[in-house]
Image (cartoon, rainbow, N blue to C red; front, top):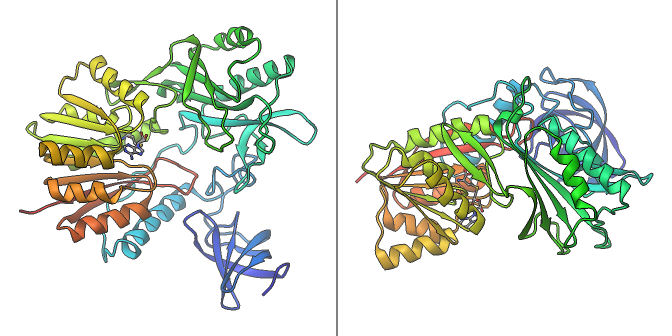
Length: 459
Ligand code: SAH
């Protein structure tokens, strides 16, 4: 098989990134925009020794799980890999992906999995979006998302995963840029001013019928100020719920979206949101779970696994703005949170105060430094440790220190089941036993899946 060959494939499987997988002449082909069960005619684009990539030409027989994508740019946009799949089938795919990783990477023959916690409405759930700003071929200003694997911007101001108000905000920003001849940033040359518009909304804004709540707009610029910003503020303020308008300064030649500095243009530097009866203050640079409806279920599961009676000392590593910490603090003796982003820890401390929670304490620093240091110097104790690391998982020194502290239970919240499986395997080799894993839907229509795992140590 070689480039430009046209072949007919039965799509039998899905890669972890959501590409359809089929076989022909003993070779494996990855095909974007196909789903398991499709019979498709595809054109080979690139061939390696045993596998290759092909482009979908046409579907000959659609999979029984196939649906028409509600979003007009579902295919070119890199965000939703599974939108053309029935939601039930998406959930089955995600469960299977987690099981596979636990078996193949973790070595757990029959992982103790609970059924995935799915969503009722898999759209309009995201409270945050970061829209790159660019120009189309005709020079028209556009805002949207990167096409899969590229940095070409697809014009899409109303992402169906996000709040409806995003479009209104983006239209105002683009109008402002047009009117005052403000240039979008160009990654190739490093010139131009406006890079991204980040929008965050409180949960109420995601309510379709009757949106209320708070909105944050943060314009990321390659400079120190935005021309005529008072006029932009004036236009944005007309949107009900507008609470925070800021600039983020990012002058680096990097594809990291946000810089470190925030400049307040109007309102407060934060918005507030409530999850499970706890009120959270969220700054532009702080991490906050993107799917509030499901987050409550996720944290509920973490709390269930932590099995607290009120006597426990709990450590919450990678705590962000203290969301899980404060959830657990209501049922624990004391909770200690560790987080690398200083703004997030500032939020966490204020969130404790805001909710009159006095048994939670927060430390700024890397989990892999703070935890070993606290253990070596103070010989800290923990009954339960909760970790919620970024995709790359826990550093080995975090795992090693946990094994030394040896809490009765470890609750591992993870957005990447491959690194989760790797870390669980390591902890099991250190004497822990995997009790339960619960996949939780946080990213409907994408191929990502969140998990909560419970490990325990029997003395
Ligand atoms: N538990 C929180 C945040 C989870 S996201 C919540 O549910 O909202 C992961 C967090 O880990 C982010 O806030 C990120 O800033 C932080 N982080 C990343 N690397 C870290 C490290 N090495 N040490 C401590 N925190 C880190």
